Length: 414
Figure: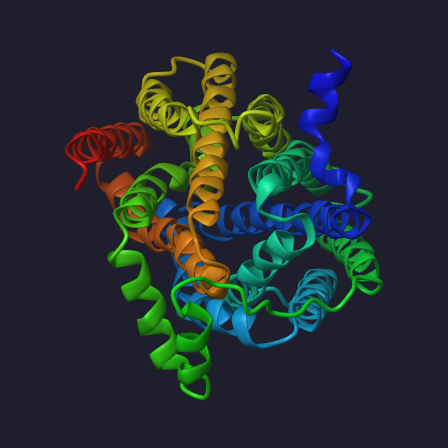
């Protein structure tokens, strides 16, 4: 039992990674709180699934634009400085939303701006966080470190959405107070980043990869194209990245429509939205702990396929959930399958990536999160036309078909 625990949390034995990990816990808590608070605000202001999709679309569009530049920046600039600056912007944005609510000047367009700002920053600092992880822990513990990072995200999703829902529904705090709590948590994340060491690029990539990167320096667009070519020429990278874009684009959008399901279908309130989000996160935490000791194992690819199919099946099951209690159980399964799929995809891809391309490849791995947020807008329109249950069924079918194609391509070696 003891040896398994050591293997599961091995990367946390590196002091610098432990700081980065703790900072991530608080950063993700703040971000997850704001995700739910924006959804609650959008629903309160409009009572429209389409509006929920538009707010998420703003996040995705900004993330999609910034994430490729974030990959280039992670390969060229100080990762520590990128994360510090980005965290400060997130902190100020949370304070701004709290002030707008407290002074009763909140408007729907502010939700769009806030969502876009968060997507922009997330795209710029996300690749730096994972790229720095590689430098701090080394390749032999990379899968473990990435899965533990997913655990920090999942753990924050247990506490943050539930806490945000409870605070929003509590008269003493309300939505404004919940935003100020989010800002305080973001401040803790910033403070933990300050003592991190400056990391430097290592010139040990094989086959002249580092030299090719240096030749492209000064032209960010050329560096982006170089990173895309690098991935497309390697099936072991191309297959999981392309599949994850489709799977997450359709599947992960379920988080944007939790208020529509809970309040619109089951006629419940903000607290119940927080509880169902927490159920998803509990499933994600369990999956992250189980997978942390297996992410570097040879059978990780087979586990990835199983999780992808479970993700699609559980979303279809959510479409048929007859009541709130069953929906909570199904959502816990969705949380486990989705986060397991995402963390294993990251681990498999980053372990197969040359060091000189870590930042740009991570930016491509991060693209699915832009895709799911962008897809939320047309999915919101679909929900308006056909109902939220039909939308969930469509999402689940799309995820399952994507995994069928991935399995066939992997078997053929293409």
